Every structure is written in structure tokens, then in C-alpha cells.
Image (cartoon, rainbow, N blue to C red; front, side, top):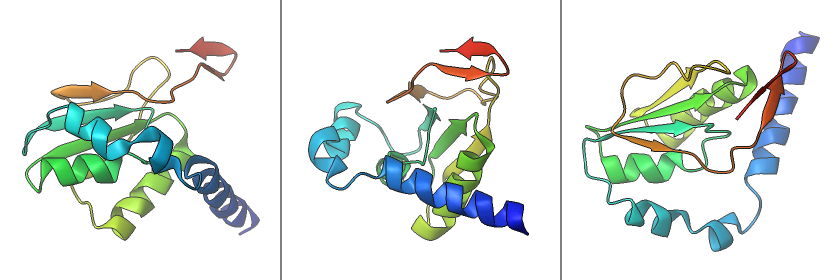
Length: 127
């Protein structure tokens, strides 16, 4: 039970860290998504999705027929995005646990990376 409570706390802290107040003002997600000329029904890979900040914007642009593959290598973030899919009612977002050297994605039409930094996993660097 203590482990589950810690993971829940960690997801809340991650959410707070990634959803900085007024983030929309400096990151301009709606303008970014508009600039990508996304069409309904497309498939997008959000590589290094983090807490899924862009996923709601992608899902709205894609409509019900599209798919957002929200890839992340951190299991806690994958769980967080899955919870967010339910909360945001965005079933077109699919949360995927990738590997350091393989995002484990079906073939997307557009790949998106933002705020992805180099990470160390088991002594090996990625990105």
C-alpha cells in the first residue's frame, strides 16, 4: 500500500511540475498544433509525452478517427497519461511504454517531440 501511495504522490508531483501555471502563455500549444496542419483521422506519435500536455490539443485536432500515441519511457508517466485520458475523455490517446532504444510505436504519420531531454537509464544515456 505504501508503494501505491508513493506512486500516486509522484504522479501528482509530476503533474504539478509539467503543468506550470500559465504554460499555455509561453508554449502556445494551440498555435503549435495549428502550425502542424493536422488533419482529422491522422496518427501522431508524441514521443516523450511526459504528462500528456499536448495530447488534448492533438486529440481535438484529430477528432474521433485519429490517434495520438503518447510514448514515454517512465512507467509512472504512462500511468499518469492513462489516467488523464479518462479524465479528459480523449479515447483517441493511446499511452505506450517505450524503451530507451525503441519507442514501441505503430507507424505514425507525424512524430512530435517537445521538452525531451537527455536521460540516463540503467547507466546508458538516451537522446
